[in-house]
Length: 482
Ligand code: UDP
Ligand code: UDP
Image (tube, rainbow, N blue to C red):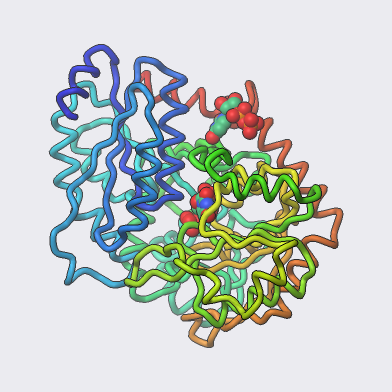
């Protein structure tokens, strides 16, 4: 693999190394970004370094599918070694990933030192601490933020409160109701902050990572200026994010997960969708990691029935190991309320996985109950489909706040958390049914807005669109080595 790459790099002047995060949503975006860069410049080749999560066989299969479905000239993949014994590693997913990134540093160094014509690194924002290795090679590094600009601003802001103003942010979050963040128009309720920024356990590791966000030559963002103009403008204001400056920001999105845009291999889904009236179906899906216990599954089923709307529901069972990946049920009937599949046979379908971008593009789909992962948001916007928000983890609550309150392209499903905010309380069928009805029946204004954003998202990546121009500038800067 490396030998082949050295040979190629003699003809192709520069080699870019991507250090991807081992999560499907992130990896798919990195691969798509790499493809677009290769299209732009035929002197370039890309080596994507892939980390395997040892406890996550299902996730690894999804990652492997993206890689094997991607045969592109000048795009190479290399699997970093899997750590042999992770018994003493953290059971917290965020901390585990951090340990994995640290473990891989010497391996990244070993590979990079063998590459002729190494011209730079592109690091997923989850692997940002690998900049240490990139710096040893004295080539530019760029961070790729696979979530929104507003969230990126929040991370920078929290870190600057801590480092520049000596604020004990954990304490601040305990005693305040809301936080003014430069990347958000409205004050952000403390209750929607990602646990990673408020959680004591992860806090120091996170803060260290956020410091690294200021170090690269540039930050590539999967967003577009027409969607997040406020956040992107906030990065241009002097000292908005504290004393240490910011790198150049490149909003080049939406970069969509094209690995899941084909309905051809999913004939049952496509034949069913083809029979449904336009805009009549609500897609219910919670990303690659979302799953529920049996009580919640039953409430969702009843909620969908109560809503009276057509639905396509992606349902998977929780992972068997902590930190693992949800898998498909062998017999889904066993976890659904008795007779549910028969009663809803004419209006609904329950499946284990959908090619999401293709489904959202189908004219029958008119709404999306979503966990608000950033990819799902961009896909929904691209297709002009409004969302009912049901965030589960990571920065999803913050994204939901942004969609509902700042962008006006979503309705909220009302959720409750236990006092320590460690887990979400059971969401009752009535709330789910109401959320689906609000989404599908009401608010023409919201539907109009999301259609407008859809048009803007497509225009942004067309010739001379905002993201297109920014992308040209980025590739030119990378390839000129300036
Ligand atoms: N494009 C992009 N990022 C992506 C996918 C597409 O910048 O992740 C650009 C692509 O180069 C083209 C435009 O978006 O200029 C439209 O892409 P395509 O025709 O594939 O999308 P469609 O409108 O058919 O969904
Ligand atoms: N996805 C899909 N089919 C599914 C579930 C997810 O194609 O049944 C894709 C989805 O289109 C998106 C990605 O997986 O591109 C999930 O990324 P997102 O950021 O929305 O959420 P995450 O999985 O990272 O929580």
